[in-house]
Image (cartoon, rainbow, N blue to C red):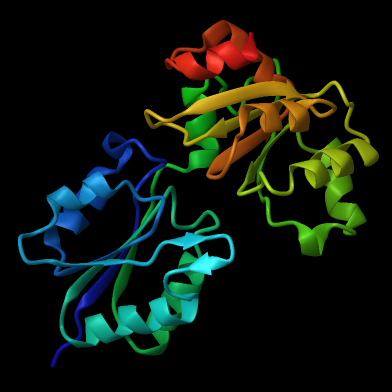
Amino acid sequence: MKNGKVYLVGAGPGDPKLITVRGLECIKASDVIIYDRLANPSLLEYANVGAEVIYCGKLPKQHTLKQEQINDLLVEKAKEGKVVTRLKGGDPCVFGRVGEEAEFLSRYDIPYEIVPGVSSGIAAPAYAGIPVTHRDYGSSFAMVTGHLQSEENNEEKWKALANGIDTVAFYMGVKNLPLICNQLIRHGKKGSTPVAIIEWGTTDKQRTVVGNLMNIEEKATEAKISHPAIILVGEIVSLREKIQWFSEEEIEMIEK
């Protein structure tokens, strides 16, 4: 039997309308859809009648399927001659482990296509009224994983983030917010540097808390901010006061 094909698709940051045209085409063409927790489930409405839908979402320390099992599942379904869409939140190449999955598919000669998506590290700030670059506020931008335990003592990286990058987006970093703030200040970032935390960005559950490196932990705790959330650090956060456009009624009470 001829192998099928796997599409490694970015579903976008949460708002289902932000998926790409190509991503939607892949969903509609698939026999099997294997989707993550952060891929909006309403996108499954575009699947073919009879398509097999498999959830493999992950929470911290709680995985429906381990990555190795997901890899095996992709190969198994493709070897059955099926068209498979692996649907991931945001962009699959930004902390989406698409490289590991593509390498595994290559090992078994399974054809695949990587379909980029809109990354939450850009989209969530945009919906909160914060562009990640601006010629007056910051011309450099970095995306960093918030799972930083192994990087806690990496002096060079923290120095670069604190002094060499204007704006930094931390993904999956709510649990490590104290570490992030302390390390940035310790390595040269001013305590007054603005910080925004955007929870469930681009969705109707979006909430944003704004503070600085000295007080954002207290504000996030008061607002009961949880994952998924993007932590954005940089002077550019101050633009939110001028260009906020997306309605967040609940969080406005917290900010006031």
